[in-house]
Length: 327
Image (tube, rainbow, N blue to C red; front, side, top):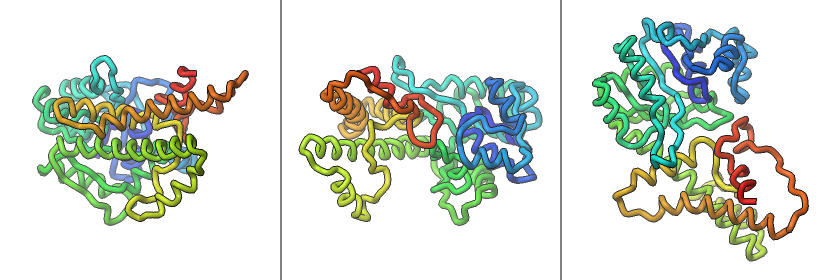
């Protein structure tokens, strides 16, 4: 079986390794970045992820990367789209042109390929794009990978969501179940709109937790309270839990900022206050941290790393960059 992975980011590379572990699969990575292509073909990881780096050290990689679309799509059975869908502040929506460009190529070169969209998209996008390209063989299946542990999360997923209830959806579900390491993982089949909703609401909930505990910390700081003790006491309740409860400058990185804004855009004609507040509280936290720094009247200010979180080499949408701008 030939599987093409479009996009050599942490999502694409993690999925490529997942499928390449099965000797029955031929996996080809397709990208426009020649540096990443060269790195893959020289058996080196182009991204920072301990398990991915270990894979390249311990294995003679079966992965092949190319920028040649005809070579990649020739005789392919599946194409996994993992291209960027950045949030466009002007459009107030995800920029999905990278997905559409891939679909144009597939339709022109090998329209029989079954397409799996892993890129995050607006709610309702998959149905619209299937109609636009007159392609019924497109399925949205969201990823829930953490940057820095993407391969682990691919091998041991919390759940698998397939945005299709047809035979094709079942085939794609079986494809993932056959290649993951985790046993007895929950798999849910649903309509594409619902699968897209699962992705955006999941990340927005995580952003909400970040915002909540940041506001706990802000309150504690203003009243000279020990926020760590307060948070320990709150999190000891099993209904609340001890995850995503570490105060920070705010949530940043590639997923949470854009996904919360996209969900808010999808709410354009629906009454809401919580979703809007989740987006707003992140900006409030950045300004609060900035004010704490300015109150100390520093003559020299040092910044320790620009990355968006620990175990990452990515500083896209890093909160500290916004704080630097405010300063």
